[in-house]
Amino acid sequence: MSLSRDSAINIAKVLTEALPYIQRFTDKTIVIKYGGNAMTEDALKLGFASDVALMKQVGLNPVVVHGGGPQIDTLLAELNIKSKFINGMRVTDSKTMDLVQMVLGGAVNQDIVNLINHSGGKAIGLTGQDATLIRAKKMLIKQSSPEMQTSEIIDIGHVGEVVDINRDLIDLLTDSDIIPVIAPIGVGDDNTTYNINADLVAGKLAEKLQAEKLILLTNVVGLQDKAGKLLTGLSPDEVDALIADGTISGGMLPKIDCALNAVKHGVKSAHIIDGRVAHAVLLEILTDAGVGTLISKVP
Image (cartoon, rainbow, N blue to C red; front, top):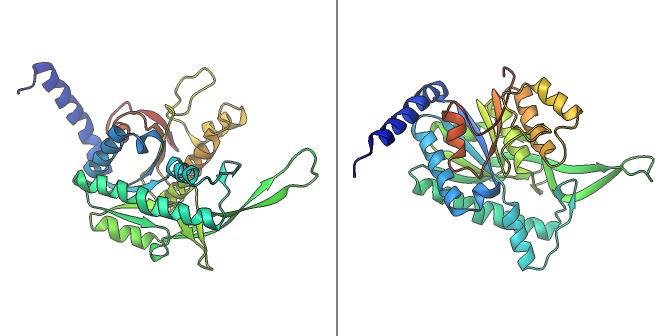
């Protein structure tokens, strides 16, 4: 069936709009944190996989870091294991850590790899344990209350923060036209494994690779002002001001901190985009309008 004239014109417009971005970002590294609805709805999963495969095909170097909170929650519920969170971090004992490794490093990671490969890409799944990709240390949470004169240091188990990342391994894979898909599990100097927030891993990885872009998929349209209007084209100073006046608060703060730190440490731009939009990654990278919040040193 042939295209109508209007459909043909629209397709040609999209392709010509994308071309300058493809030329600009050829051989550039794009770190994508993959999670939220984009990771649980079948149509969005397929769209994301085809987006990543296409990015590689046209010369970009996508590197995927994925979460898996909902999948972990489902398994723990099936096993009647209750989750406890402190400051948004899952308290992770040894038994829970074994399950986290099984879900993140196994089922979730391989599902993403299979979808990308089925879409024409060449993906390989990794955890931070592979070739000591992610060196980590235990994260200790400081918590205070009006009743306490000093902060309390809380040990939340096998929850870690990134110490270093083995860039050589990622470079080896991307130079071989392979798309790394990374589960956010790190390993300590004593061989202890740690569950790490996927946003934090993606941000640190983008810094280590000096990526062109860090993209964080979320379940909201992006950063909004107090009237609910989408904000984009922001500088780090403008973001700091929005945090100071309370515009950015609550659950968005960790993502904003991750994006802000990446930009302040050499990443060209960070994007917080709505993963509920089909093909959100391609729309953000290869179109004039984009679909989320852009933070860069030169807005």
